[in-house]
Image (cartoon, rainbow, N blue to C red; front, side):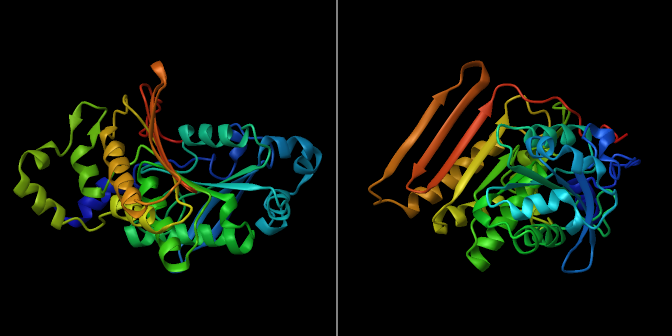
Length: 341
């Protein structure tokens, strides 16, 4: 299978024919006037990335007149949302890494942003962005490229907004879980920086496993033959250009990070990526964490919680490290194939 076809299947970045006005006019997606600030970031290799900074509803309500009167199109560092984020020592930032296909303005994604910004805390700002090649961001996607994009976004949060890493949570969905694992691993191993937490929704262990597990609508297993013939699976794996080894990256962090906090979430009803991918990721990360702390006095055994019809949960803790997995019985049914308005 040619490498170009593999990349197209992995990223599906061309499956957005009409990005629409939601990208530059977020109010069309249900946000309040100037609650969202569209802006651009530049990656280290020169790609222009389109992003949204979303103010929490609680903060917006307290400053409604100022938000409404603000001039549209102002430089990001002159906007009220940016100033409130930067100057509040209690502000929290959730950086959202979306899955493949479509844009940051896809309906299911904007619903998520609104739920996070309207949460119990008035302090949670949301930063979402399109990787290179998605929406109106420039370039073509690749593993190294998307990690450079993630670095540009995280660096902006750390060094322009001056938000310390202990107030930043990285949340990824599907493909975004691999990007989160990759960028968190880069910062932890290269700079010794650990974030407040990593949340991975509908994750997969690595790109090869994702390809062989992926199905369309839960009915058409696109590459099921790969698993049937081990030799073909090995051949296929050797030809993967972008491998996205989340299992290895998370295991490394579980062994070496002193404040490693990981939350895994998946649904049994997931029609695209089977939940056993998250189960495998949980088990491999858990083994690495336990290997790193066999003699800790405060080691807690794995705790399982039956959530009834909501699903089940397992939580592992050891001092300031924790790994949790929630497998819901029922998940969302929003289609990633729906075009943006």
